[in-house]
Length: 403
Image (cartoon, rainbow, N blue to C red):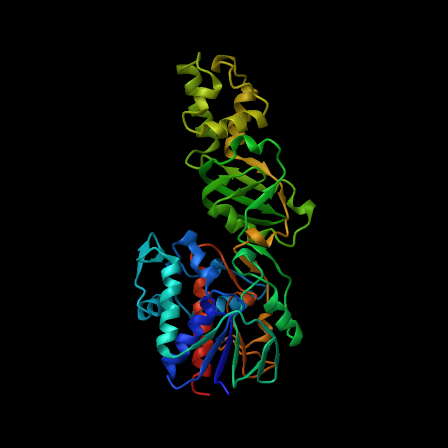
């Protein structure tokens, strides 16, 4: 008989095991991991650098169907708890403009340190062992059964299937009769229909992206990466979480890009007008390449059907306005894709109404806890999902420690 069986050796499961052992070293803890390696998503997070938390920690940093839960969670917890956890694990962090990373800048080393600490604390880990069901206090795999006083489901979502993401956690939850909200890919590129976008493939440009959906206006700033059929980069990836669930009509021309946010529309037009006055024998393309990437200029001119080789003196007022408007408000229609392979997380999950929001224990199944990404709680880019995984795992562990 175990005191605690944890299903999943990702960051939430490892944090729960370590925290439970810190609280009560006498606990007999087992982690079951269906993959051959533990913490594969953690090892790839933050482009391999592992952004674990953020200086900004408020309601706007998370998505959930239960808005009240977000408010209570950020009021109850703080980024300092996450920082303290990693420091205690022997993983010191540094602050890079509000984003916290391990000093090693190596996500794989973070995984290694957490696994090593589990080993030293006496936590048993069995890999290649997928859980197929939970009956009362018995965890069932295809090979055997494990009895435990408490169980934590920490097996994550179906995002990032190349790194082990799957629907196995959802299957367990459904078998237990626990309600879930709708699932959708989150933190993904935003796909658009624009056959000319290929001209700017690979361009990275700083700008502001705004979604105008019905009466909602959501804005993100940062680097935007242009791909052949989608727009990526941190600004687009954060905005992607807002488009799930809308119909095609609502998304029509809802995405606006401003690739020169330092200028107002009038200031940009005035700047171009001065260029026309001072360099009237310069080509339109050459003028634009003074402040925009060449490949983006090719795309822009192709999109608005203006010959880049015409001289500035030949540019009409209408064409001048068209150039200015498309730099300040380049409009796209997002196309919904059910592609979890490029999703960093999944939106939705176990309904918050099914758990005790302080301890993460299931109301219908005492002794059973759900933590991390399997819940209907998703953070934006910036360390928020790792923060929630750690904090939810710690909360469950604290409740279990002296049961």
